[in-house]
Length: 232
Image (cartoon, rainbow, N blue to C red; front, top):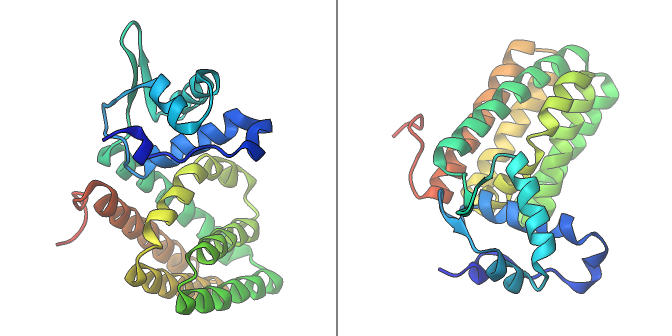
């Protein structure tokens, strides 16, 4: 399969920050599983498909290497290093961080924080019923961001920030499924309820289970097989 079916061209309007846009396109394509783990990258082909020169492609690949999504081998080229195993590890890392943040949110959330979370969940319900995936992704990210804000924990939030590129890409894959949208809505409602009553243990557990389950489903969608930890 050629890369033209896997990455979309960069539009002229975004040329001012070309490297960033090329980086974003490639990162989303890799995490969506449109490149195989271990596949060699053809920089000229990618540049042609993206409608750019090879310079921003090379720059983007260097950035992707710092994120652990590609590796450079001298005299051999650049290779994809993202597969089901790494996706599972990233999901578990996110679950650990998000569950601790949710625990602290249940401990520290103010009435204003809870009201904001209720608003986000109500809007998520409307977007779920309407099947508005783009709106739902945005609201999903706002919901988690509000929990981060309520936690008041800058250190964990900074660590979790490094996972954002994975989180957004997984939501793109997951929320296209109607059944997954319904599950996510129910889980977000349960997380809200735990935070609202200050139940730290429940907030931690439900958030962890939500992130782990979502990660397993993402792996099943992208790599066409369930992760080892997913129940039959």
